[in-house]
Amino acid sequence: MKKLLAFCLTVAVMLPVSTAFAQEAPAMPAWSMKLQMVITDTCGVNCPCLFGLDPHHDHCRFVGGFHITEGKYGDVSLDEVTWGMLGEFTGSRENQKWIYTAYYIDKSSSKAQRNALRAILSGPPFSMLGEQLGISIGKVNINVPDSPVGKHTLDMGKLGKFDVQPAIGNDPNTPITLANPVYPFPVKMLSLGTAVGTFSDHGKDMKLDEVNIGSGEIGSFELSGGGA
Image (cartoon, rainbow, N blue to C red; front, top):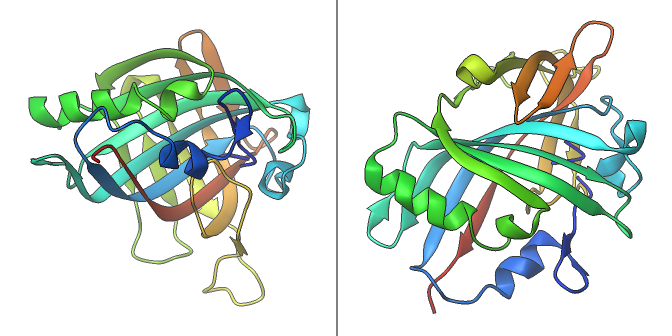
């Protein structure tokens, strides 16, 4: 996602996501998430957003899945919950503008976990990423293979599904990675790849195929907020 990648938030001025978290008012319990991420978007594998440049096609539409390997919201455990995100933005790092976002919580989550994630995703910095189209419950699943060069899958049930194949360098067992990308989330390292699949919700369609191959990004990061 170009993503998932030269994103800044408008808070009176353009701020990176990490700064927005730092300025978040303590209006909710302390929360934290360690996340495994699979992102697909309409830029090519050579996504300019990762370098802070304007996206391909003058805009970037993306769909991502985030699996919480370890997480808490107050006393509520968020371990093993997966959530998804649809979004679109335009512009480079200096003049980036978010158009909209929508969020999805996997239906296997408990009522307490859903309420916790709704609270997190409806507040800053997520609420600052353009118009928020809603937070819904449905299938959100990420399949992470044993091999780092294996195919990753993001399954959003009836809304769509994407396969992400990591790009491979001279060593056939090592994916091509990018360190310190321009990104809305504090991702330090990304595995780059190709994405094919379809998605449709809120009147926003995304179709990536053998002719119109999209970008895929795989990584992990941590987020936290709330509390004192």
